[in-house]
Image (tube, rainbow, N blue to C red; front, side, top):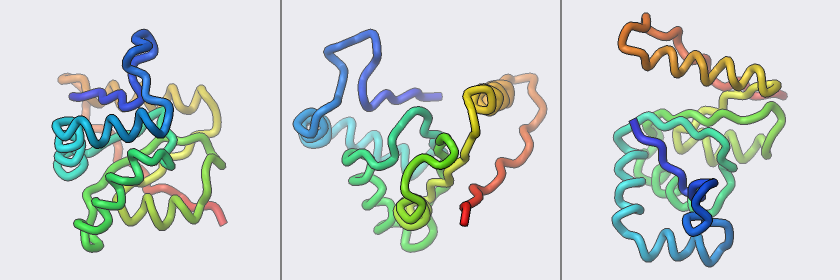
Amino acid sequence: HTILKLHGCRTDRNSWVLTRHEYDKLLHRRPDLRDHMRSMYRSETLLFVGYDLQDPDLEWHLSELRALADGSPPRHFALMPRGHGDESHRRHLLGEAGVDVLEYNDDRALLDILGSLAAAQSPTATPPPPVPRARWAS
């Protein structure tokens, strides 16, 4: 299992990526990281937690996924607070890149989701229930 902190680690100020210049350096000066991310997008199921899905670095990768997937992208998930973000962005840009948004109402619901996912990773755990498809509010 991998935890990839693209914005850096909270406890390591030197790892923080916050500005457009820092994004550009990350994407263009670290081809090893870019290739690793590309590989993960294609071969792993990803769960985005605490990540704004409109960040320029992610959008670059998602645009590549949409182009290469040709209508059949790998499946990924993003946990987001209900009502967060632009719905047309979710449907078009995220959906076509294979990212299903799982919404939660409050911190307790988020903790319940994360607890269920952690329990499902336990070697003695029973298989987790199927993850519901994202529901788009009208």
